[in-house]
Length: 252
Length: 307
Image 1 (tube, chains in turn orange, cyan):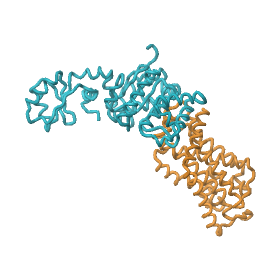
Image 2 (cartoon, rainbow over the protein chains, first blue to last red):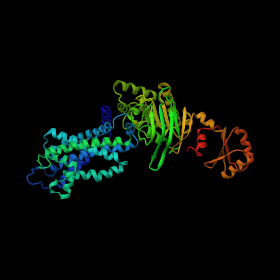
Image 3 (tube, helix red, strand yellow):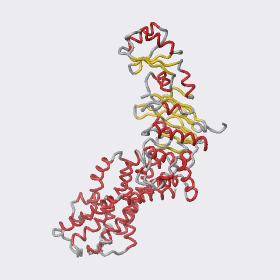
Image 4 (tube, each protein chain N blue to C red):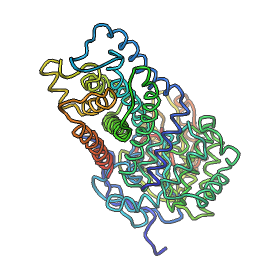
């Protein structure tokens, strides 16, 4: 079980580094977003009263950009599942005598590792946005489990769709709005009621809120950091279990 | 042999929605046999392959691999099987060795055992010198050999291959056939392959012919071709229907019309052909005759040509 999961994990890593363009895509796009949106909105953005933001919108947008980097990397690493499963490496994996859970775990952990590495690279830019890193334990937990949950979600979507076109549609209709409505771009407090309601049921909101609490050093009344950490962890486990069930159902 | 058959398929049926892909197929493959599933594309071979390799669930009937049921004892059945897919199952961005190593890990092999097995299977398919190359730099025939090597890595008792000669040129196809026979002779591996090529099927110990999901014939190539009465005469003509009736009236034979050609099974065709040509001057454009092949067996059972 562990050997199988390990081998699938290591394949993801090796493949990633042989496709340099993916590194640029997953890290570069959010960076451009951050600089352009952050600088463009900078003048119009007003921090809520009592929230000290020296860096302005660039600072506010920093945790959201981190979430976007994790999202992009997670998606790029799961999209291969679609082709892989129809014809390719994954066929051979499916007929191998390994527990289905190992297949899901290896694949998700691979994507998680890549997302975490990209996230760490981005976090090194924190001083540019006047963001001070602290609480490394919670921060590490968050980056790892947000990545895990997003990769797991990507895995589920990729498994359910037969074509990469379908996956792109889902990415634009579900995953991207999920990021927009996570507090990454704007805080829930100032949004319309129905938007706030969606944000409240969006699991990514809890990841982004917690990242903001840690990175921007701002305490939010609700959800508290503990609630956020619990939701993020719970969602990650949920995607893993759902993935294993889905894969087992496919054939016997 | 006293043990269970290498492959035991019993009353297997499978439908995709309304379409019946397999209809009550039963057959057994003995250990050490090279067994061919012959049929046209869409005949049900690939469905059968996918069920045996555990990629599709069982709907009706059962499949056992050396006694292990592929549905209820999937892990045990998977462990006994090496599978080679029609569409490549290699990661072309990894090297040959990396592909093999991943595969070995999936089957629980590691360390020195894995290294020895990798060297062994690569030597068998003569690819030692390409071990460290990316798969995307290999030719189609070499990739197929890597697939076979990969499937052989855990030393499975049963090797199943779906259309293994797809995309291979004739010489690569012959090499593959030699590799599979060598494997059976040295390691006693049972080989089950699907094919739509009669010469590939002719190289098997026994052949099952699948047509429209049904098993229409089963036996050694020699026994199957012996069922066909004598030689095969094929006539090219502009008016097959009229000629068929005329031939039927004149000689006591039953011609078939297949793809616009007349086919007649007839012993001692070398005596029959001159009579035929003289009896219908002008109506016959061309005549060929020869010993029956598996293609003729297929035509006899289905009224159609293989391709």
